[in-house]
Length: 249
Image (cartoon, rainbow, N blue to C red; front, side, top):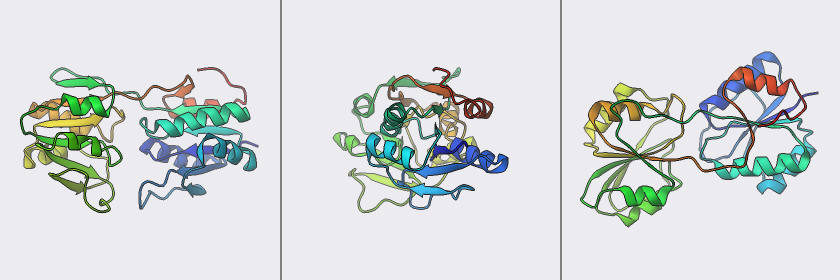
């Protein structure tokens, strides 16, 4: 019997969970536990880490998982690496349900950088007003440029002081709209945006708003991962679950 571990935390993962529940796919939804109030899912749900690749391998064996679908955020690289290693160790078929990365359109002013450190270096030296659309895990590096004012958008209120000398946080959960993000950028007089190339539609609004307002964007490229099978849509995921054999990357 097929028993799926769905590694979630994205809009795409929630859509898969609804489809699995509606079509009778036996699955467990897994949250990393970084959000205080994660979206409720129509599947049995676990919250928290597995204890690295070894812990995940033990879980796959103990729970008799037959397939793993990795629908985590494209920047949750360590979880994805752990899934690749654990599935290889246990011979469990793995498929990543991955959003295509964003591509620039006419009028976009994007600077691509490989990581957070390069994003910090790409910021201007003169004081500016920066929208950091990167979550809360990697903020501290921007303290190297304390002359800027930083606007953050977080799902949960920060615990304690922010690791930046001049920063404020807006608490909101996507998906967002282009009109709403345009108003946000105008109201806070934002001059630059730093974002991760997460792809998808729910978070692209800030980039469309930046194009309309002529705001430059520093876009952090996705981390590299070992080869794995990738699905771009629901049909490809369901085709993966219909076959026990690993059909390749």
